[in-house]
Length: 259
Length: 317
Image 1: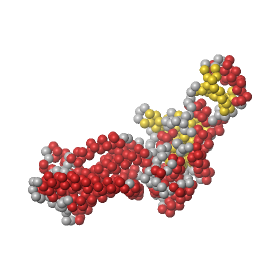
Image 2 (image 1 turned 90 degrees about the horizontal axis):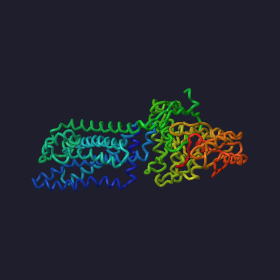
Image 3 (image 1 turned 120 degrees about the vertical axis):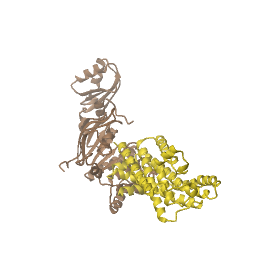
Image 4 (image 1 turned 180 degrees about the vertical axis):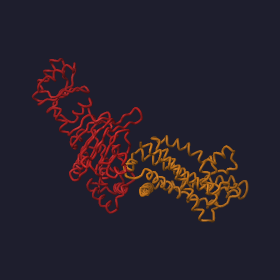
């Protein structure tokens, strides 16, 4: 546990050393909301007067998921870099559990994701999205995001532990990233999808996290279809399961890499 | 523990990578406490792989090893608490300052704050980095980075310190400085040091014992003096044209010749006194039809020992 905190601190300190990283980290989600969200909102706004704001409310969780994935990819890239430079050897030779090394990285990624998510929610609100009235729902939303962030960080760390090339890493991650984002209900309602895509979306943890966020963190968006067809407990269970699976994959890949 | 006099021991240590690469082949080591032991060999000899196993970074394929009396596989966690390591590459986070680097490392080993602060100051002084302590390590020169790594290896009060190519890429002055630190350490503490190097002067200058390593095996082991003495008092190195075998056979029969080796196109003849025997050696070459192109007399070095046992010259690159 101490080692996890220590590595978390180190990664956060490293981020603070580079102001450009912090600026980019804060601006990227704002750009997503403004450029993508507002553009789509205008398109949707042509169908009915409410549906513009409704789409904004609808798409904010999707942008959160997208941002979490981007942050995890960046975190995996940092890990690959530390592996290739050899910095990881310092951790390996130290009397700390292997898992805590990975957890330190994953939690630092998630910290950044949570900060970004709050920025997205605030900008989303300014752009017409509606937030739930219940602060517990906001906290629950952050938990869902944390689970999702740890899970995808785990996958990114696993891929970054299995390759020695930055190109290879980005190629493999790209293959994971695309279906995870687009084969889900993050940008469009499930009901509008053809059935084969809907099956894919139900197998995708992104769908559960995004659905959970729509249920408890955001306000209602009636023109975007119903969101209650997945029970909330299942959303939390899938987020927790995804986090555990991601870290398991990362640990296995890491152990294999140091055999 | 009954093995308190032996700091590092290995029995039949083997490491394979996949089917085809046999990186370390059946190594038996027994290194007493408070010794400086050098593994000397060219790049790719298996030195780093040996160190990686002893420092619990990778597991051996077969065989066993103990560091400070603890099994490197079964008690890896405990081994890690008692060793310090510096790696072949410079492994410093460019975003941390020198002081932060040491502080982070000490915290990895759960060293308390008061002890940490005192030690960091002491070590920064020892390696003469106190003035640069608050600069990020990406502003350091190669020599400063190595010195910081040495300080980092020491901050945890290790019983055994592994230094993998501690002076690689450093100029002569910085190398001499690092050697001085290492010698001081050995004298002032009960530390055991295992270092790897492909610089024979380094092994000769520092080590109490040297293991010459090639193709994953220890070819010969002993103190630098023992190893060099077996080469004869003086070493005559000859390069030339003709049949070297005939010449070597003839040289072997001379009463003052202590050893004859032929490898890598160089003939080495160990004699009791080089300057006195030079004329006779040249005469023997002439009568056996060997035309000498270059001949030199020198005191034998570990490089000559290396050539004898591996059939190759130890080159820096």
